[in-house]
Structure formats: C-alpha cells, structure tokens
Image 1 (cartoon, rainbow, N blue to C red):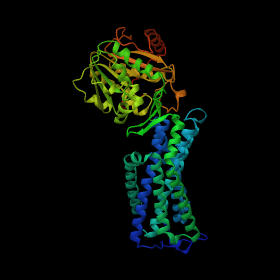
Image 2 (cartoon, rainbow, N blue to C red):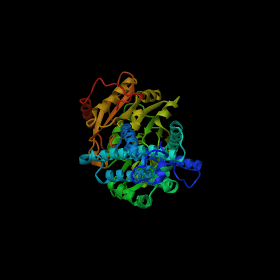
Image 3 (cartoon, rainbow, N blue to C red):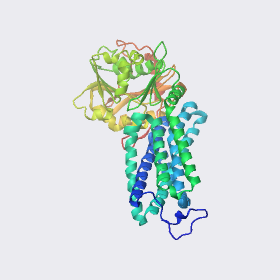
Image 4 (spheres, rainbow, N blue to C red):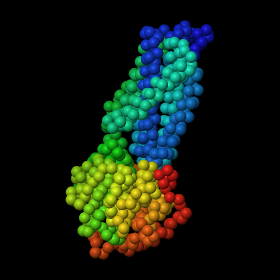
Length: 547
C-alpha cells in the first residue's frame, strides 16, 4: 500500500504521492482492475498449459515434462513477485511493460519451440539439451512475468481506494483464480481443437497485451508521463504487429515445419481430438509412414514384419475362432488376423475414431491394411481399452492382441499395468492366449522385462521373443522420432497364457505363411531375447507405474 505522505521518487509526477486520478468513478476503476486480473490470469494459465502440452508432444514422458515446466514456472513466479517490489513507484508503467513482454514471450513460445524441434533434427544428437534448455528458459521467463503481475496490480488497486491488505488480496486472488479456471477450460475445449496450439497461443498473447494496455493507457494514463504513454502504446502496437503477422503465417509455417519433421511426402495431417495423425507416402509405390503424436508407428517395409510377428505366433498356438485386438486402429494387425481362415469374429477396441476413419477411407492406409474394415467378421468399438475390459463381462476370446503404444509413453503405462492384464485375463477362453508388444528388447531391456514381471504377477506365464527390423524400423519409444534413424533395431513381444505353462512359440505350417518371418528366425530370436533377462523386477501397477 502506498503511503500518501511518503516522499515521491525523483522525477515522479505529483499524482504518485496520492490517490490515482481516474477518468471514472473509483468503484468502476476497481472493477476494471479486477477484470484485468481475470483476463491476465486466464492468459497466464494458457501459457502454462501450452508449454506442458508442447513438451509432452515434442519430448514425450508427459509426467516429467509437466513437472519440470510447472515447478520451474512456480519458482520463477516467486522470484518475479520479489522483483516487482522495485517497481512499486512505477506500478502503472511497470505493469504495462510486463504485459507487453509476457504477451510477446508467451504468444510466440509455441512457434519458437516447434521451429527448434522441426529444423534441428528433433531432440536428439547435438541438440539433445538445447531445446530442453529452451523449454526451461520459456518456463522461467513466463513465470517471472506472471509473478510480477499481482504485486503491481495490488499497488494499482490500492491507489484507487485504500483498503486493508487482507481484503485487497482476497479480491485480487478471487479474480485471479476464476480467470485461471476459465483459461484452464478454454485451452483444451476451445483453443486447442478450434485454433491449434500455434494460433491459440498467439491469440492469447494478443488478448494479454490488449487487456494490459487498455488498463494502463485508459485507466491510469494520468499516472504516466507523455513519453511513457507513447512508449507503452508503440511497444504494445509492435507486439500486436508481431503476433498478428505470426498468426497470418501460422499455416504456412506449420506446413513447412511438418515437412521438415516428416519429409516431403506428407499427404494427411489431422488432429483427431485424441492425437495428431500424419500419413506420409503410401501411394505411387512409396512406403507408407504413419505417425501418431509424432512417433513413427508404421514405417517402411518392416511394417509387415512387425505385425506378422505380433499376430501369427499367437494364432498358431491354439484355437483362433474369436480374436480381440486392443488398439490397432490402423487395421494392420487385423489384416494379419483375417488371413487365418479359422477366425469367425474379430473385435477391435480403438480409442481414436479419427484413426479408424482414415484406416477405412485413406487410399494408402486402407490398401496397406487390405481393406480389413470391409470384412464382415470385423466389429469395431471406439473406447479406452482399460475401460472397455472392465465392462466386458461374459466374453471369451481365444486370442487377445495388445497392439498398443510403447510402455515408455506415459499415457500408455496403464495399458501395461497388472490391473490391465488382470482384466484381459478375465476375457480369455480356457485355452486363450495374450500377446503383448513390450517395446525394444535391445534398447530398453528393463522395460521389456518389467512387462514380463507384470504379466507374471497377473497370473500369466509368458514366452518372450523379439524380431529384428530389416528396413526402416518403427514403433518408436517414449521420445519422439523424426525419422527412421532413431527407431529401434528390434521389437520385443510376450506371448502369454493363464496358468503355469507358456504357450508354444511356433508358426502353424497349415496356417497362412508369413512373408517376412520363418520358424527358424522366431526360435533364434526367442533365445536371443531370453539371454537379456533381468530378474527380480517388481510389477507395474496403476498406482505405482514402473516404466
């Protein structure tokens, strides 16, 4: 609170030694300050969520990235609040400058991060730490600026009408928290689906600078010198110009960045609401690449080798009439299942309806999956695999195929938990089998054998095996991959059955013959996988994930 009898700092306008001279009534002025608090809080939370989302998409491991961004930002907010004490005699001008800087840094942060990711070859190699440092730098800068807002706004609201500090803090924090609620809901439900991350962040920056500028240049203009008014006006105009120009170029920028990340053969790039789906190639003889949230899930000619290794040993080990595929919305695992004549029913449970639509309609992807969705034996359910299994009573499948993302991806850990495998066991017929893709054996043996330990804790006995990639490789791990060079050299699988004996690992000589896999290779690769065994690992559970 400003003491009206305190001496003014050198060069300060006389109005700084007393109440603010407002163009409106004090009650109206106080209301306008609280509205500005509300808007700035909403913008600040959007910046936080945008950094967390981008870090999760671009780097992976959303728990770690969210922890880093939020902890750095909260720490910086404390430092920013302390630093704002030096501006208390210049609260109006300081607040205007802070809002201009915050709008520029926060609004452009998404575009800057994506540019670094796209044009430096991803987050590996020489740039492994550089982009992560950039993420921390943005979190630090935005946190410092957000932290400086409330102390400055406290000075401004006290200049309108003196009140006890507790009452002023309560009013400011009430507006701040309600604004944060609105920003937190606007980001996932409005900005992200309708504008995307780039344009959404730029629009947020524009709202931020307009709100801050309107408060300072409109309500507190008499507290500013003529030079300060013009400086803040021109700076705000410049920030709006930068943000507007970036928004106008956002589509071209995104296309160029996408080509830098995925190559020049990109045909489809959609945000389905569940994930980003990108299809490259797949026509005119070019291999099909399918990226889900930036991770290469189908790549080159090794796609068939992966899916043959996932499906055929499981269907060759016993009855095959009723099959359940968890995940696998691209239809490629279904293609291999439908090659077995004994299959009478194939249920697919996929979370993303957008991926299913592409698998049905895209010429490259539907050709790759052999138009599996046109087969009358196929029934599709759009649901979360864990939730679907909880309600799947009275079903008995001969084979359950878990064609799911890598266990190292945070969002997938629940699908590699003891609880998940316990639910999968309930839907298996007496001689049923469960096959799981468990990530690369060579690159991450501890993750692979943790999946094996989790299956064992769920009452399964598993036979481990791996298959080496021969072409480009795919199904990248927890970090995003911008190309085949970062894909694993092998894929690890676990073929499991309830009880004390593992199902036989073999290819049925009377069944469909895999084009890229032989029995000798399968046997040799099973021995190679067994040699990497790590014992004594605890199982992964929903409340204690181990991946």
